[in-house]
Length: 462
Image (cartoon, rainbow, N blue to C red; front, side, top):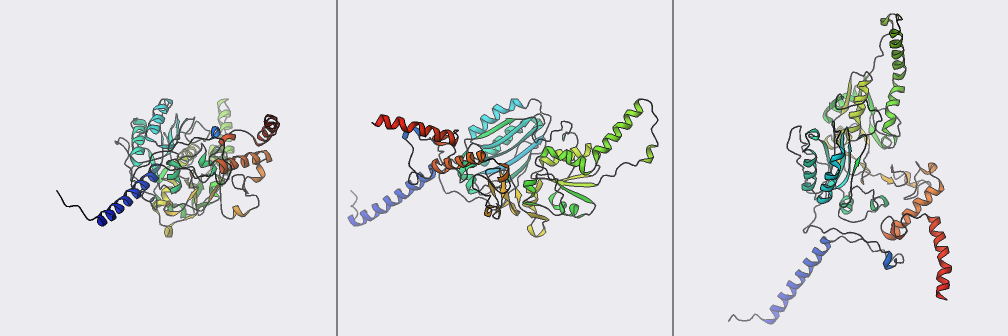
């Protein structure tokens, strides 16, 4: 029999081992479940019957690596390739935006299997399917996202997706792993990075221009690499057009860029017609054609020289709107139409700030709100009243009310709309989620119900 160890040494060793085991169990427990912050100490808790259940997702064990400090591009599968290869860097999650214009009349058949695959792999985000192709932004582990992208590209018409990979912020990771966000929208059904929430929608267009005659699958402008963009837009003979909307351009744009002052992409065609007086030219041409058909001799066609249209360089966030906009300009008679390949995001990722002609920040349609050079998160926040970006200066305005209004939407909202927004904000602050027991009920109706219930409670107590 082996000699027994001294009791003192055994007790110390056992105590140390027990401490290590306790620390390990506690760390694993924290990793496995992410629990919502308790609010019971701040407000009276709801009755047990009214408690909202929140699904929690098991977490992978082991230390969580910090998100990458800047965007990482990855190899998009070329036409005829086998699939997409993601560069996840040190992050557990990736966010990938992608699109592809294609002749896709049976697009509705892809919706169900694509949604089921995303739910099975816990890939979140939003995807649009239309007769003209696919457009989406998804978030998940590199392996899961890669499987989804390869599944999409298993259809030969969708091979060669144009893709951009973006870094994942700590807030995005928290939402994806089951936390509620620090913002009302993030806690509600519009959150783009919740692991249990993916939207696959069927629409007429993957980006709405409203002109069915514009077909990027047939004709599109010339792509310009980010490294060649500065030389093109610095040429004084080049007209630089920002294809985005006013609220996006307000926080950042390229030098010399023209702002079309549009509230939606659908307004872009009419702006082009007015800016370059194309509507008048088209009507004159139509009139001449009609005169010729009824046998009139037109005057000398050489007497009216065709309108000279300028060289145009256009850009947008990720490139998809420029595909349609450049196709539209070519259909209107423009000869030299260029657009930034990969959009502003690819430019900010590849071009150093010291060499950049970009001014300000770039608005993005996710929780980051805006990004800077290197795709680092910007300084702007989101007004949840109008879903538009606001700066620190905007939040000093008396028209700014968190979760309700900002200087850009205050005058356009009625008092009833503002009160509904305040009720939504109170729900979030009380329950930690949008809704709670009062989900879907207006403040006035709630007040009336409480007033009617008080006499009943009083009589029952008596």
